[in-house]
Amino acid sequence: MTWSSWLADRAALRQERGVERTDPVVRSHTMIDLASNDYLGLSRDPRIIAAAVAATERYGAGAAASRLVTGTLPIHRELESALGDLTDWPAALVFSTGYAANLGVVSSLAGRGAHVLLDAHAHASLHDAARMSRSPYVLFAHNDVADLDARLRELDGVRVLVAVESIYSVLGDAAPLPELYAVCRSHGALLLVDEAHGIGVAGDGRGLVHGLGLAGQPDLVVTATLSKSLGAQGGAVLSSASVRNHLVNTARSFIFDTGLAPAAAGAAREAVRLIGEQPELAAAVHLRASVIAERCGISPAAGAVQSLPMPGPLEAVAARDELRAAGVLVGCFRPPSVPDEISRLRITARADLTLDVVDSAAERVGKVARRTERVPT
Ligand code: PMP
Image (cartoon, rainbow, N blue to C red; front, top):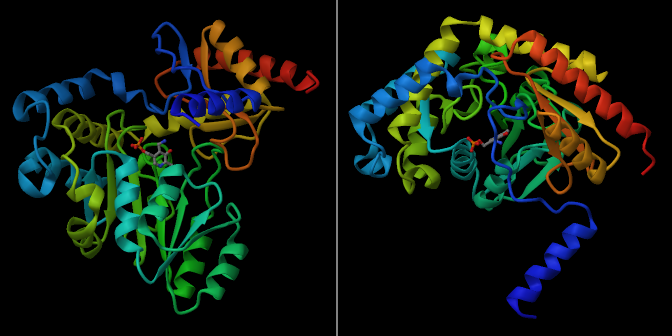
């Protein structure tokens, strides 16, 4: 088989299964965007943009080298110390993306002799990280503390890294973190919590781990992205000083990657300041999330993400397209990007949209969803 016929074959198969993606659509600012992860609206906030410009003028457009060579700039250190202060962790290490942070932390803490256990709904980056670690890895049932306990029991005496999200990126539900952490502690396992969707929204903006009083606990490590609530780009690991030191020495996605661009670091640094000073930003997200939930007839989410199940992938795409034509952007998740084969619309709340705008957009989403549910599949 030639490469071109193999590619045509794969595209035909995707089309048949209704999972073929079209080329990404360019976002238009005339639309109401309930699909992005810019939960606090900070990516377009003039203070954040000014901070990005100031950092660029001061340090240049790029970091120009790996952090371990000459790519560590004062703005990286300032950002790391601000992130540590916001979330109450003694140390923070900034990566070029949240994806790279997950790859780095899992592959350098797991590896030979270790096992990785992932929540069944864990983000793709955690799966890739587990594969990169070359540790055996298995999934436990989503948010199921008893299942995790049983699997840890079978691995007694083995070094185990357990990875979960604090607020799930597609389902939007929260992990039972105190219970998961207690089970991990009782088996000597390390718990990694990906706060990509928690920082800025949960725990008054300081994240769910902080909100639950777990920040700084032993055998607990947090990853965060700077590209969602913080409105910038980049990722971070929040940890003890000894874990940070281990990452600096062993995390390949830190060592062999160019340092975070100054613009992103400057923007994120300012976003951290605003989030710390204004807990009302997070409160505004929760209020808007509850409006969306009510209009769509679903229970309110733990954070900004609302998940609206659809009968199938074709119906989900049709609903997304109909809403787009009406000026409302929502996310559309379907196999293979969902862990449970359920296609769904993903609707996100944003603090910077007025309640009226959110309400009328959500009403439209609810109407389309109700009509879609009545269409036989
Ligand atoms: N973890 C989770 C749970 C995510 O949702 C994402 C982004 N989709 C990432 C990690 C990766 O973060 P980034 O976009 O900063 O690479």
